[in-house]
Length: 253
Ligand SMILES: [Zn+2]
Image (cartoon, rainbow, N blue to C red; front, side, top):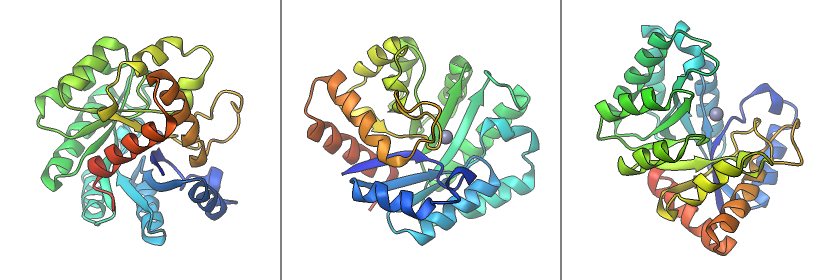
């Protein structure tokens, strides 16, 4: 049994075959999915998917790309959605200083506001951090204690150690299979098993050999295989531990 802790099945890339993709992943042992909101619209859609499928949970939040258009009304709507029992986390939230699609000050403001929401509801957060690791860390540190997972981890060993010291979880996507990802694989190898989680970030980041195509949650198995190889343990062991981690972290049933 596997958990894809981060996918976007509400995105239009799945409009033609969403139900089949969900069934296919389930038949391959991907028995729990967290569908992650990136803005208000996709947070609402995530909750709708979680209501439709017993094994799908939702995360609600606003991606740093959309921080410029975040208003008090957006916050109120996200806060209302977050009270739903199938909402397992607040996310994805964070900072993206790579694409800078929203002003950095707005990114920081929204990130802090949504962390505050997570804390008030005692829910974990799913953090997106790109080219902003020191700024991300500064905000997270200032708002401890926090239950956080760094999604699609792409940082260096120093950032990894700082996150581990704060008790955070680390989640990897199929990008650890990319030919040029040698240093990321070394970083992944250093993550203790009891802090590891798996995700696909579907429809993005398909595994090596399928690049340029749409990713889907069944490929979380590819992440598991690569991490088992890196950690030099049996696949069944890796699956068991990462599934337990996901169940505990997100309080899945
Ligand atoms: Zn994502």
